[in-house]
Length: 382
Ligand code: NAD
Ligand code: USQ
Image (cartoon, rainbow, N blue to C red; front, side, top):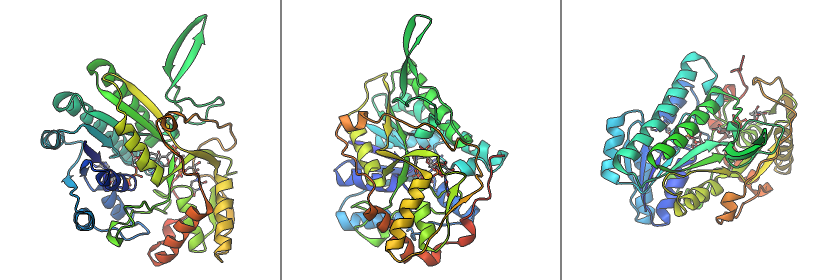
């Protein structure tokens, strides 16, 4: 298939582009390299040293003989995006290309506005480009489990049957997102659903949980192909961040009581889920929602698990509960359905100590790159 991977220079997009290329698809990466610029803005970095996109794809070609085309530009620039569609005629458009940090979106007005305009307008442009240039193209859009929030009932996959005053309907599941970033994903979902209804766009919204790990088979083929790993207060996410903290002897930072429960998956399952979605396209006009995660953990349980593995590696990391910089439920019910991807063939890789050890070892290898001042949270929701 001809597949565009937008955001293909990022943490999820890079390994996905390599995996799809290895499977024999004709892959094109579109990226404006904004994530690298945000590293400069925040004076932060990936724990692993990442090569330029140019060097990454050149190395991929050298190692595998497979070509990945690249277009450097912004989804918010419709002329640029139109040219990408004209030149690539995509059958699937995998859309990772958004600002994805909740704390970044909560820094101030400017960062909230940037996040929502970058994400919502970029996605709207993609919908228009599909309508105008590739009406058969399947949009595979990365949403987030955080769109649902933490309701006191089970989370279904996108829709819920509701009976009200004697009548029944299948309606979009209620959304209670917890940051301006998470809200941008809800706005995207509504725009996609509407475009499916009025133009017959085919779309799959992958409501992804928190992704952990870093390596896939493909990123390990050469050091130049390594994936990025975030650890800082803005882009570091639970588990990867905890492992990096343990590696440098920093306390493992549990926000508040640590009862916050979230859905997780391994980066190796992310790439497989995207392949499954691409191989099984939505119908014309169908807005399909898959909950993309394999298991859930409370933040505190995860921190203790990382502490235990770190201890086995001779690292003395302490789990420390600190004041929660966010406004969120800390003790709540959590139960989410995730059967649709499994029904289509996903075989979940559940979290093992081996995976935690692998992240720890990478962090230890590059510990001199970790900027300690960037670890503790300073951005608050207030
Ligand atoms: P990332 O920041 O590492 O990658 C995103 C990439 O998109 C970057 O390379 C960035 O330069 C590019 N980009 C951003 N805006 C763009 C624009 N307007 N035009 C072109 N390129 C643009 O993020 P990630 O962790 O790889 O996440 C990818 C997607 O998956 C995001 O949409 C995110 O919301 C979603 N997601 C991520 C996680 C996670 O744990 N990392 C979990 C759930 C959902
Ligand atoms: N947390 C801690 N300690 C930390 C960091 C986080 O206790 O040091 C807590 C947070 O308070 C929160 C939970 O861990 O309750 C998750 O925070 P996170 O930063 O790991 O993840 P989040 O902000 O939700 O965002 C990440 C990605 C985002 C994606 C989302 C999936 O950055 O792109 O959409 O995970 S989900 O969580 O399902 O919404």
